[in-house]
Image (cartoon, one colour):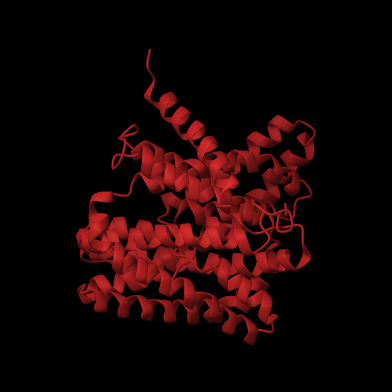
Length: 388
């Protein structure tokens, strides 16, 4: 009996292996291969996987695991210190990028409201690309990862506020109340996570830490449980997963959990990038390609130097600050969510939504390509740049 799910996964991972091999021989990023495969097999070209809704839902689990693993690498005290250090960097850079996006929207002929949403989409950088392409075994890159993680976390919180504003705009009322509740619920999730970890989870891990299967299952249950609690309270699953990871970071078993979950994370991230390419409608591409390409190029040029200037003022070395800026130079997966939600609720038109989506995908492709060829990464095509 033909099973469409099995068939879909066969096409995705077999195709990813083939295109991934060609990408490595061509000295390109594997992420680029996944996106191109999605475009090729999706509804716009071959149509071999016409229904991407289920795959899109599955793929977001990869982002959830990614944020959980990020949290496992950060001690709570160190995280608070980093957030205090990078708050002004995040707020200042977000304001500048929002202004660039608004001006670009106005020059392209979009309405003021659509231009505001384009500016909002430009504020954020991709957590997936920023962290997945960052090596962890070199000391200065461990420090860079900590700084980048704190910036990305604050950006994610701002993105959640934007999503709440969009939902409130669609509903017509209650926006202020929703945002106030957001802060309360965020604190509640953090308190609940740390209390349960201290009095329940830690004791279970101490008693059964020799049973690897149990540790694996408990870690997944903990990650998804806090993520689900966060989503139920109106936050995002990604923020909940990050909190779950931070609450476990002080445990001596945290490194083992991180190593165990990385293959599972990578599985879902392949699906994420595939669905990203597959969901893009090539029929709208001709209308938005040129302005989206110019906008993407402008952000890829501006973002690194803005971050370099702001991070240098914090005392970071100029070369490392510029490298962190390059690694944060793309637009975020949250921007795709903003574009889709805004179009679904009627806040912006289809053309503006596809302009944001096209710009985001172009920055994903160009940014990952440049980073892999220029800086140390776990998937670099050059031995001199390859790091675990």
